[in-house]
Image (cartoon, rainbow, N blue to C red; front, side, top):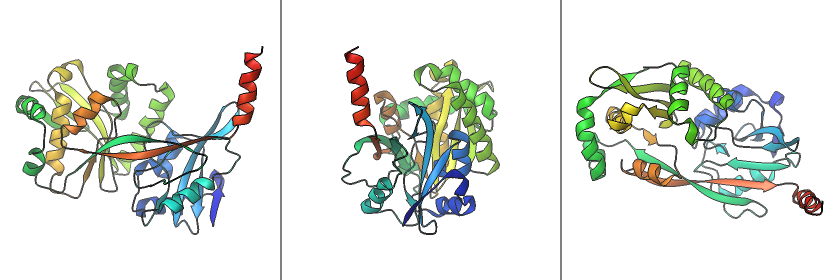
Length: 310
């Protein structure tokens, strides 16, 4: 039986243990992460937390409750000790209470959705690079253009750990990238909390690179969970863009973790130029499913018709 538990009824220790032990676990689903990025979230639970599906929600849609995908939470969905079957994923989605009048939820890459009647479905790309090989083997699959840029960038940079505080990294990101993404100021503040929590829990690190003069040219936050090194949040300075500092930073982290049971998760992207950049490291494209439903199509049609006749 799949139960819907409101936030106050969740056994957080059991829930987090379920996420930690899940074969398809993702750090975005931990309670402390959702507390920071969503605030209000319920959960669907199978049995004794054998499988779980968090439901972040708000009431910003016409004042009605809706399930939504919070900022900086790329993938959620159903998590279990064994990879969930398409039938189980469908059962969880069907168990979302009708009190949530609208649903938009991105499942994780191991959630095969199958055929879902009544749901809008679209696929989003991600890029993964397995690091459990010698660095020379990984490097041999780099694109020629990347190798060319790295030949010089490697002579101009040095990898550094924790060069910035979460707040300073957030400010750098907003200054250099903020105008290209639709993200409200509150989401950045909430993600600063996530970075602090992850660093304290040893589930995240801020990495950066300096040039030959010791000036910081790039920095990024990387989650470290479930054998994934996730490239969540990073930006280069104007000088760093000219020196290809981001190329160096990712290459240096690949070199550092090569031969270990890690996967570098580039976390996107659907933007063609960024997708080409991630692909230049030899990363393979994978997809995850986002599902949506509108629980009030009839009401909305009547509202739209009324406005047309006004």
